[in-house]
Length: 457
Image (tube, rainbow, N blue to C red; front, side, top):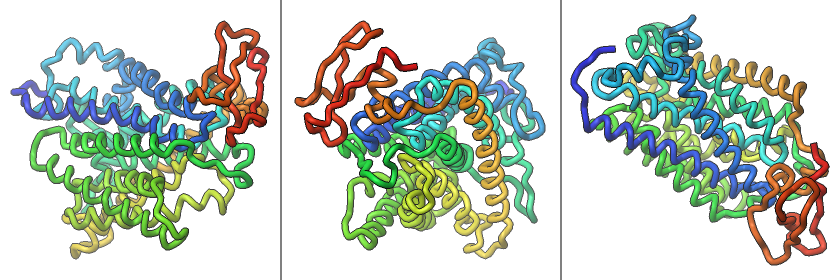
C-alpha cells in the first residue's frame, strides 16, 4: 500500500456512505418485517439484526482478509495477514488506492457484507429456527459472501496486489473484467440464488398457496423502502470512494432508475390486476435500486431510466413465478434481487456507453457480464445447498408445525410485535416472565392460540 496524502473530503464521504449503507439493514428489517404476517414481524426483524452482529465480528476477525487479502486462485483472499485487522491497525496511515484510509474502505465494505447476508432472510420468513439462522449467517458469510466479494470487488493492484477473477480475468474479445460497480452480482444475484436454494430445501410455509399471507403493516413497508432508497445513495455513489464527479452522476443515475422502476411496476400491476398498490410502489423502487447497482457507473442517465423501467416490469412479473412453480420465496428475494440483479448486470451489455451494443459495439461486453453473473449464481447456489443441508442434518432447520401455526415470534423469542386489545397474557413453564399470546391472523378472540413454549426443543 502506498503512503501518500490523505483526502479529508473523500474520507468524510466514504465514512458517510458506509453509515448510509449500514442504515439500510435496519431499513431492510422494517421493509421485511412489515411484509410478514403479524406473528412473524419480530423474528423477521431479528434475522436482519442478527446478521449485523454476526457479520460485523466475522468481518473484523477474518472476513476482510478473505475478501481482499492476497489472491488465491482468483476465488478468495488469503486472510492470514489480516486476522483481526491487526496488520492494518499497526499502520493506520496506510491508504486504500490514493485517497482514503484503508480503514474507511474496511468500514464501507463491512456494511455491504452485513446487508447481503440479511437479504437472504426474506426467502425464509415464518418457518426457520432462529438458531439455525445464526449458524447459517456465519457459514454463508464465510463460504459464500466473502469469496464472492473477492471475485467481484478485489481489483488488481489494491490492498494486496492480485484480485479476483470476475473483476480482472474474464476476457472475451477486447473486453476484460465484468462491471459490477456496487454489487449487482456479488450482492443481489448472490443473495437471490442463495434465497431460492434455501427456500427449496426449507420447504413451503403451512398454507402457502391456499390461504392469504398478506403483509401485516404496509406503513412499515413504506418506511423501510424509504430508508433503503435513502441508504442506497451511499451504496452506489459511495462506491466511487471519492467525493467527485463519478459519485455525483452515479447518484443521479440511482435516482432516475429507481423512479422509472417504480413507475414500471405500478403500470404492470395496474394492467394485470386493475389497481396500483403501495406494496407495488415500494417493491418497484427496490427493484430499480437493485438493477442500477451494477450498472450505475457505466450508463447514461437515460440508460439508467431504461434499465429501471425494464427492471420494474420484469420483476413485477417475476414475483408471480413462485405461485406457478410452487417455491415459497416468502418476501420475493428471487423475484426482486435475483431477477433485478440479472437485469441490471446483463443490460450493461446493451447500455454501456463505452462498449455496449446500443453504442455500436459488439456482444463482448454482454458475454463478459453473463459469464460473471451466471458463474457467481452457480457458485452461490451450490455452496448454499451444502450449507443448508448440513445444518438440516446437524440441528434441524424448521420449526415444528405447532410452533409455525402459533407464530414464530412466540415460539422463538417469547415476544409479540403488538399488544392489541384481544390478546391473552400467560406464563409458561421455563419462562421467567409473562408473554403475550396474540390471536392468529384474523385477530378474532376465538382464534387465540395457546402454545406450551416450555416444552419446545
